[in-house]
Image (tube, rainbow, N blue to C red; front, top):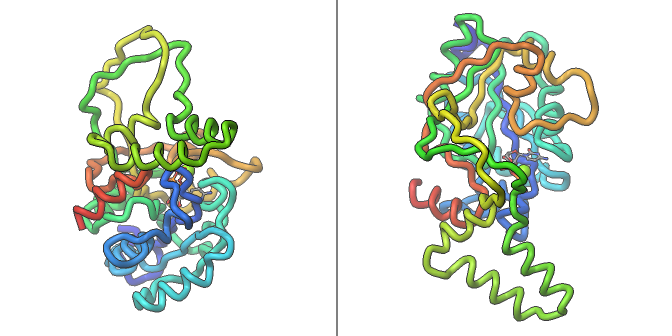
Length: 278
Ligand code: CTP
Ligand code: MG
């Protein structure tokens, strides 16, 4: 089986170079506090200690490279082979990390640092089917809610952003502070904050059969040659996950069972939820 550890054939890319705009902290999301250390520590330690992974490349924002190297040293994360400066998009960050991976790597696993609670069970689930010839394997979750297609709908500009813009225009800082406070501490704050990014206006045109739909997470595992081929070419590249670039070239992607605890930390409420699961 490819990448069953020890032969240097399975590499992990940990993408941590995002700014964390929606979290709204005073530093990049990977470096906010989670359980008494930085968020990046959780996934880095877990990937480093996985028997399935031989080496790790971490992508961080510019000027945070040193902090990541120090963190790896503190964690004694001895599989960390390189810390690279990420790009303007997630895909660009993946590509920068991919450049550090040697040609003889067989398997590359890509994981979002924003999903701290990665474990060996899901790593094994995504690696195993590669032996059957798939180009990539992704963890997926079935949808619980009814799904509808909406026309004329746009993702509503966030309530928070609107209020911040209004505060700037009106020149009324109190409005900005009270909005922040309301969104964070009001009853149902969690739902309120999530709704900020999920609201869609428009008219329903269809109820979609959700039976064949999944939401996908990371870690995503790939045959190294397939992933490299997907990232070769046009500049700059945009894609919210790696698998979509492999699919675009006709690659075969298998879905395996995901994990609810792989929740991506997007808002402050997500951070609190993940912290409660530590
Ligand atoms: N990521 C990255 N480089 C980027 C953008 C994102 O490495 N230019 C990483 C993030 O660090 C994160 C993962 O991709 O681990 C998923 O991205 P997301 O959750 O969107 O994080 P951010 O882009 O940081 O958050 P936001 O979109 O709210 O700014
Ligand atoms: Mg982002």
